[in-house]
Image (tube, rainbow, N blue to C red; front, side):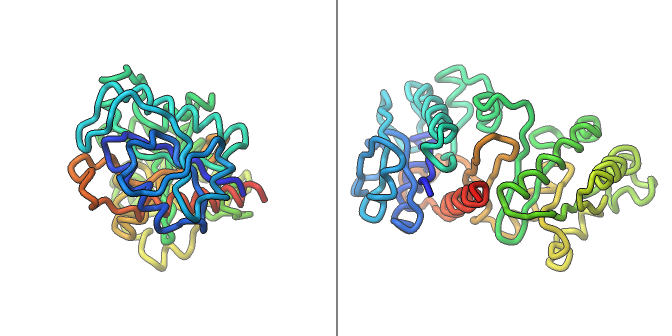
Length: 322
């Protein structure tokens, strides 16, 4: 299997140090190639420059493989330099080119700082995911949060709770479930994935007495997709669908809004959660945390989520290849 490409992310955050820590734990057991400026990596980390991602498999046991991408400025922990913003963006684009060409098996992205990119390079996208979608030329992608205990997809993401009912349309929910179903088949090896769909309101609306979105929006989409052969259940009351017994009855859950999805997975596995972007023509995972400027450069950053993201990227690449 071709190695995974790992982007550096914001070099003044914890990205470079967790990349080094992840390599130290994984070594040759899961070769990946760091794309960024080797000068931004922690001192003392053995580095092996490579000319292409495939070389990482040969050298990863003894050194961190690095596909060098020079940056104009040094990385000061906790303080992003606007001069580096354009290079952060270019590393992402370069990694996408490598994955789409088959030179890398999957993309794992280090955390970026959107304000730093906007201030330093006029970054025009709300976030990482939207930029990747633009590079891939796709209109609709879906965010999945995944760990060993749970895979969950929020239908709406970074919007105020007050705006969720208006944003939660039948086409949005239909696309979200269809993309999730296709990814579970293609990238997770599930022939007939079982998807549980949450309601929006308490007790899933309780027959309309606590809100009508389940009747007007959620249930009709579920019925339409069941008619296409998808194994769906719901709408479920969100307060009873994430305990162990309930999770055993489905392969992934679709939630209606951000916190409804993220609270259960971060409670189950705060350090090991992985952000997966579904709907792209390539595999993309990332650790489920940000740049952590407050602890950058202090040797305190935990690489657990990055290691989980790299492992998931490799597993998904194997499933997709099969």
